[in-house]
Length: 188
Image (tube, rainbow, N blue to C red; front, side, top):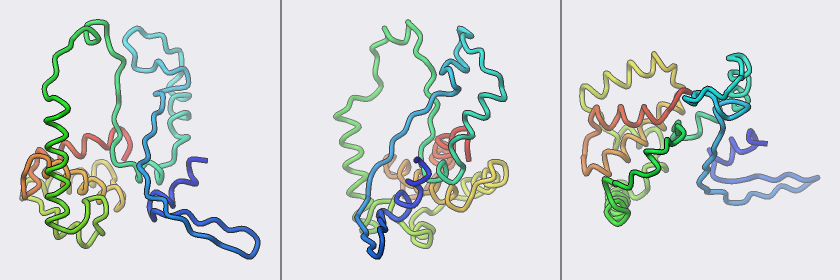
């Protein structure tokens, strides 16, 4: 069923064909998904409750195709919280501060390119996602080592452009790019 979402995630529309009729509907949506690391859900947990074999973990994770993973911008591993972490109430940045930065980045993108970064075509992305010299070397190495598809490459650049916007930077620095690459997770 998830594989059916590949095209709507890319084209932002759903086409339904029945008999002699075909209808197209808008489908610009934000896709958020969660997945356990293994069939039992305890892989990589420090208390070693997981009894799944490496083969069963790999088989479980391979149920999600590479083309679908390519269409997901942020892949983040969330480790289980320890008791100490649950009690720690310190926060580095409040919601109001983050909201202000996000709104500012939103307006910056609209002013600069008349659309959000996620809507940039590959050609326009080259124009607005300028890399400094060290960033260009990093993305070259990442493309080879991580075997990034063209789609994944462009998604990394869009995320890096957004990170740079949140940092109020015109140029994507190596720190912005490495952060964007870290969100690719274990998949490409």
